Length: 309
Image 1 (spheres, rainbow, N blue to C red):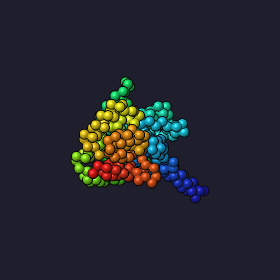
Image 2: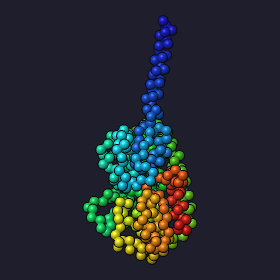
Image 3: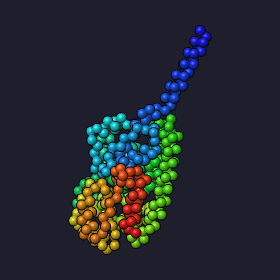
Image 4: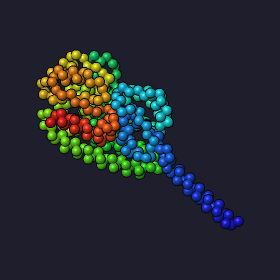
């Protein structure tokens, strides 16, 4: 009888230990359910979350975050998500109705705390009364120093949502931040190849402002004078841009791979400068050399330096 009682006590202790272990690591079986808006946000979230999260990314590779609207099958992922990470600053304006209607968990802007660069998202012929980018330029990821803040915001949110794995999130974040600092140093070395008089940027829309400010370039013209690709330039604006390209000796026009290059191609043809594709709002397809944020930035920097040096 006494042996049986001891056995029962031991079994109860084992059961208690197993229960405590499961309770202390609730995300290890299926993972904390997390949704990221863009492939860029998703890549950084994946680096920080590691194996403790169950991650879904709303926008597919190559999608334009300014205009993308998620299909109905994505609504389930949104409604089940415990955390939804978005860039913020108006980038995901087209997603807002879906987020408001379906998200029950917390929505976190990874760009929170970044000093946003100002931009007046108005141009000739714009009759809209509002400005979706009143908070500033949303393209914060174009400077890896901003992506360090992304990483810190993501780690803090995951640790708060899943305290049992907080130390793992912090360790992952610190390791990734080290890589971002190495990337920043590499970019500074690369741009030294570009003479100061050639550091003039013309892009299809306002996407490189953070890069320009951090690394000593000047954004001198935009094919679409707006932060969003969902806009059209007037004939007068295009004529003024072509005059500026000729007068300033601009060497290239950088066009986002996610948008239709027709107008930028025409400007390049009219002015005799190179048209250089870069990535702006999405990671690249497998085999592109831009499948992760770190490689994506290297791809873009190499393209810019080669075109302007």
